[in-house]
Amino acid sequence: MLPSSLQTAEHSAPIPLDPEAEFATLVLCAFLGRSAAAHRLDGPARHAILRKLLSSMPGTETELREWMLARFGKSFTGQSWDLCRSLANRWRIDGIKAADAGVLEDSEDVPCPSVLLYKGNLSRRLPRLAVFNSRKPLAILPDAGWIKALRSFLRDVRHENIAYASSGGTLTYELVAAHASRASLPLLMAAPFSILEPSPPGSEHYRKACGTFSCLLSNNLCPKAQKLVCRDRILAAASQVHLVLELREGGNICTILEERQKKSPRIQFVLDPGKKTSSNAGNYTLLQKFPGYSKKYNPPAPVVPALGNLPVSRRSAIQGCSGDRVPEKIQWHKFLYHYTRGCPGPWPGQSRAEYLFTLIDADPLSGHSALDTLIRIVTERRIRADSKMVRGIEPVVSWTSIPPNGIGSIRRWNRALIRWTVEPCGIAVSRKFLRTLGAKPAAYARDSGYVLLPEHEKFRFQVKSSAGAIAWAAEREWRLKGDLEIALIGDGDWFVFVSGEKEKERVIDSAGPGIPIKTFDLDPDP
Image: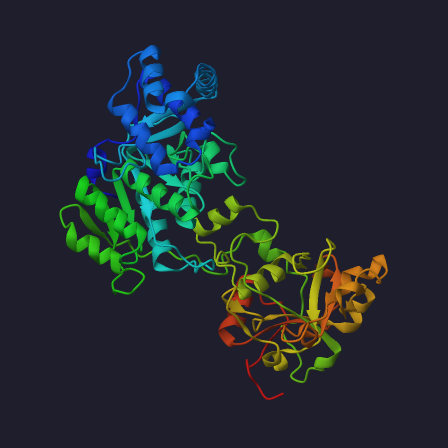
């Protein structure tokens, strides 16, 4: 149970403008977006002008027109007034409103943002909670301390006492938005894009929110990094309760929260990591500088679901697999090998929302590691084809004739993707059986060779490496069109391989004891 102080947090920004001020703001936004004279002004410069409008608010349309004429001179014509007034009315019909950002506290040194444009409702009946976390790697460990703390906090907060303020484009914000959307809880979304323009793809949380707001008058005014910094500043000001997970000291979010606490302190629940590291040093900064408002959060020990506690449908899918033993002496040359990889983000065919829910719900496979991928293949009894890494659109399953005891010849660290090119786990299938399904070796050739292949053979094409580039031919790749159904493979014609006993136990615990599985040392003698 969270403290009752949640119920008494001060309600603050953003503050909806009265109808006259809102209309004047929208007219000015329309002019700043259409006027050639304003095109050279960046976001902060435009917000400085909006701030001046709010500080000397004209009371009537005549006064507004005179104010804009005095401000912009000959560039503000009667025609531009009519166009901007018409556009402002159209925006109001579309549900776009304006609010005082409430971020500046009348500070003159930082003019941006001064106003927010929003759709929906900025209800201030309940205090808003926002969650802050420094950027994390693409590959998420489902048992990481920060995400376990987030699950615990979201589970324990009393829904009737709180609303949520969040955003998109950053994993932690998306997790909070997904939680609020699924539970139909009040959600206010800060958009790192202009709501005056069409929403970008992947913005379903914004559509489900009770209100969406943005400081951006146009998408192309500010650099992406600056958009995200302003988004974080607005969230810090628009929320009366903060949950701090892991902050790097001196990072953007830590600096923003320090500034916010100095100007207008509010309740902060700060995760106590137990040990200070470079990834959480900012937590200790907030706890030390603001002891009256920053409270240590020590989540209770979570109940971790056993790996074997998978839905019955997933466990029963592998009951047809027989033979949990593999001969000690394997004729490696008779098999082809599909090495699995980690999949940061959603699985193929999985929506972003579904992926977020697996992380919130502590699904044991939500980390999407290479071993998770292998377990998914075995429990679904299917290897899914993909076309991302091949020429054309024909989806294929890639194989190699290099067995696990030779993985060292093709295993390299990919610095760009921050992962190994090959992980020491996967599935082996009889080469003879795969041939009957149409599997063939990759055809390595120059770019010009692609057009020379018959249409039904183009799925095999792999560009031949140039001097100094990756030697793709060393992978000795084979390809199979379409998905592979494991149920079609006979006993003795396939097995799973992993690099250790712990990995083996996890596969068996997740998929059942009927899996033919073999362990091997990562770097054994050939």
